[in-house]
Image (cartoon, rainbow over all chains, first blue to last red):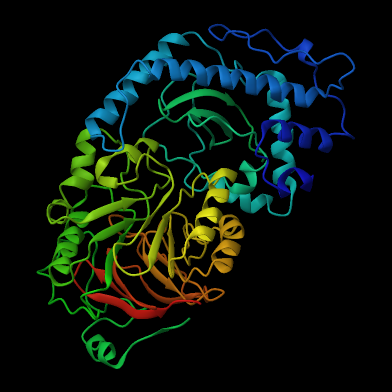
Length: 218
Length: 301
């Protein structure tokens, strides 16, 4: 396990990418961004700025930068849509909460209609995240971490991108040791596990934004 | 820091089921309950103390939840606590407006009408939007802190399903900046629990326990495991699991865990407590209006 990546809090996504790069020195290079498939339907192509001349490029770091750029783009669009709805206050009624959540869900689903898995978690990103998780769970606490995540976690459920997170499924615990190794997300989104899926969840709209199958190591 | 029973309380405890034991009477959780027994609280009920209750894993809308809620009102009438801290799983399953009514507003209406305020933390069954719900007093935040209206006391509601670095940094900053004598964190997942089903969350403990020790936390309230448990002091800190407000996992306490000081896994339970100076008194009260565990904790200094 690359302890460097998880010993300290990685407050900045760039730090996560750098840490991962440090972990991966002895490993074969990941698929380059150029080899990645084009962005799926309904997901505009959002890519980080190309590296300046002479600047070193790490394929994993670049993949994560691409993911974060797409996440930030999603968050921007989320905010724009949310701004069209009445703002929830700290004294909201259940009716207001429910109305807003479902209205936002519909707006986002409409805007992202046709989106496919991999819009944010591109093949490159999936490979990086899986390797990152493998390192976390390969450590001495791996079994215990997995136990925390799988507590009340359904094994057989099927999820779909841009669909509502099922009301009957409790949220998985994501242990602090795992979150410390994953990139920081905007407030609207969280990483959660459902079975062995890692999902990117829009917690305001209760939507599965994207997912990675078999992300949780066995 | 230690727990003990005063002479007066010990005398009153003669009327209650001994701590850590199961009731010898038939206690089928599914069966309708007989008329509750006479309430025999062992709390000092001092005028200037900060009185509060702890409730967890309650939002089912079940008959048992309603029956315990009725006992909570009976306790309130004798021991007027001003607030209830909620250790998560506030609404199970669907969270439509009618669910808020059935699983929260109706059962606790007598308390809400009496002016008791509920301060929620979120469990793994809770949607994040609950933070906007007026009656949960979360101020729109997933984790937050507030001072008691009396005594030198501050509560910290944490979000234990997603303990990200930002929350940990925030929590330490708040602990460090507080001059309250009592710093009381509460959240869903128990760092210590004798539950066969869930048990201790060692990953969470690894992160939080050093902060509890460093900043003189004396007592921590949690839920998740569907029973009541009070641990022996763990590194001088007493942990409560109060996860049987509406769910019950009968017989789930591992009697051989070695960490249990008091428990009940045969009935639905909430906790009533009061802080006065350096002491926190507590009574765990069952759906049968029985005090099934009691004592006093003196804070760490």
